[in-house]
Length: 338
Image 1 (cartoon, rainbow, N blue to C red):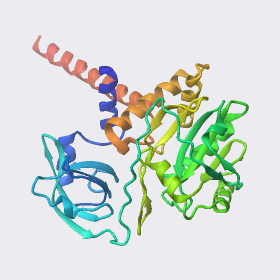
Image 2: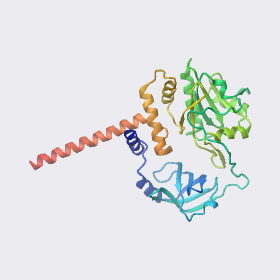
Image 3: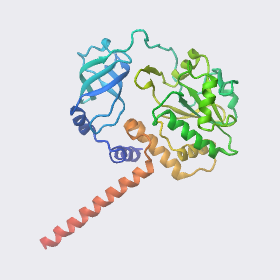
Image 4: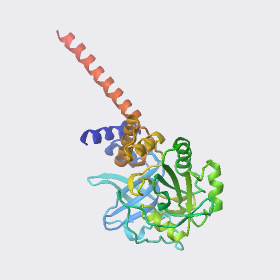
């Protein structure tokens, strides 16, 4: 485990082009941070902010600490803010926070009293309607391993929903006779009717026998999303703001794994699916899957979409080159002293 964490830490630094926390803090101080508040954790004095790119830091979602004197009650989900960032012993902290655009008062967030799902649990028996207008529940996929993801048809961010659906298209081509099924549930049930999903499905050549797109009553669909920690809300500039969570289910309908990034590897998913039922799997693809997943868990979305194995190879090449240069330099000094 220690070796994996060390490897992941190096991958975060080298593979994704990010910097250690002190360097990140220095980069953040170079210019104000602009972002939108996703969640305010008043008791922890923290805020989850999806911010734009600034300095060498890419656009991503980050948890920031808030100073004790900050007016936490004045921050609301959906507020657009500008702030400065500094490093503290507890982590990165926002200060001099300025609200540049308040969330619409007519659209307060809905707090859903649901319990988050965990690995090993089965999904609730929520009723959905697919792109063909047929009702279904997840119990209908018993006997098949399921890849579940969340999208909405009006998403225009190529790094999110379109990327997931494109990867689903590739997965569909590799399923063949394997007992797998693909499911995408909409994040926008009020707009994504079965007819809209059917049109979207045609864009990605989705075969309804292998790939189901689901919608349903908005309140029930949104409650289902909240069980995964996904609570989308509308932003007038970018559409729906939401977290990413792809879920793998075994043939008994139990949750096996969560993947909290959009840019996962198709080969990695296929290897993980093979491993669920102890079928022969590609060990390199599985290692790549685990390294990439661990890197995202430690470093966040800054490394989403990177290949764990490729980054590891780069790290080893860099480390090997550094050792070679040190040895060569050391020998030269030794010869000169003789």
